Image 1 (cartoon, rainbow, N blue to C red):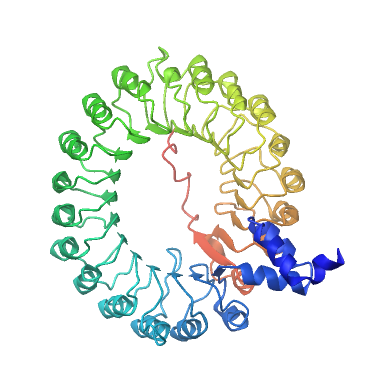
Image 2: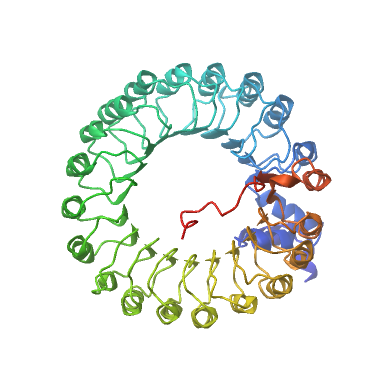
Length: 570
């Protein structure tokens, strides 16, 4: 034991075997030698407050990844200059978060960051991944400087940077080594500016576009013709024809989400006909879902499909039978499917790893039992809003002994069926039970001791005493959501026993004033994120939480009469 405490080489070898961040944290508390070994093995630094940066520079100078998206206060240009001068090995950088705009960061700060990073040989930054989110003062000149200084850049994510325009797109188009590009949120981009990407980004492998109402047809055609190595495209749009993608023949993954009214059947069949190596397809056309003929056509043209996600409200048993015979599928999602009760759903025994039947209606107990029996190896199961099955049907889920994530929100699962499920669960990490009104006793949740994430929004059975039992038995719990419940600060103080708790959601909880959240922040060293009711904005509690290095977000609840959910009228 004495050798293990003093021999730095031996300690380093032991630390290398620790993959879990919790175990590494515990090892760092042993002694100084172990602490230094854990520090040296760290490759990524996540900063929760800009005030901590000067204290961490000397200890973590060797890290290759820097995440500044969790900062609870406003970053400044000087912080980036300080980071650039200390972290000379950086390859991965993330700045900003959607919940909090970084209003003090400017072009000058990021430009100086890049300049300092590239001030030593080989006169170019080692950065190959950069993500910038919600930085309103960001301008085109900053992106130009970034791409000129980061010649090794392979991945660029820009999200809700409202000041960026076509000048930034022109600079991106000139970055010939770029392999991954994600553009999201509100910007000043134009359709013709986006089209420039097709002529420059020849090495692009992955493209993500979520630009609201901006017309992306011209850009898609240009990139389909110019980027011959494109493997993955993910789109979210209000209206698009998608016809340009017919010119692309290298796709392996295609995903899109839209609310446009026109049918996409014909163009989708043309796209998959040109991309027969497609292995992942997600078509979430909310207003005009794909027809039976289109789904059958996709399955015939793509024999190697492993992932299929569909809005299935128009799907019939004919298309379902075609899916049944697709033996390569491992990930299937059929949203809003209307079962006839004839056993069609139950025949989907494909030995799936992921299965989602969100808001499916008409499913009988025997169908669910058949479905479970045919997919005993499933790891992720989402039955949110699945109408039809009773407690008898849900009890069969206990046979899925490899299950990691389970969502039974808005269902008729009860205490007995949840106990039956728990009997077979050894590895369940995530459980969601939003508005499960037939559950009456919180003690049933303690039968899932390995839980790391738990969602109990709108659950009437939740009590302060129940939270105490939860904290004592689910010691690995790290993420907890309790929105729209009767929890009080006393119950939240009970949760301070959950030493691993990282984030908590308690908006729309009228009896929470905040003292319980502060108790959690003081007791749980990992705690860093909390969502509160809007009435606490500007309060002393909010200031105290921010002083404790917590990211604090607020949700408006003064006028909320019902939860904001697709089921709020049912």
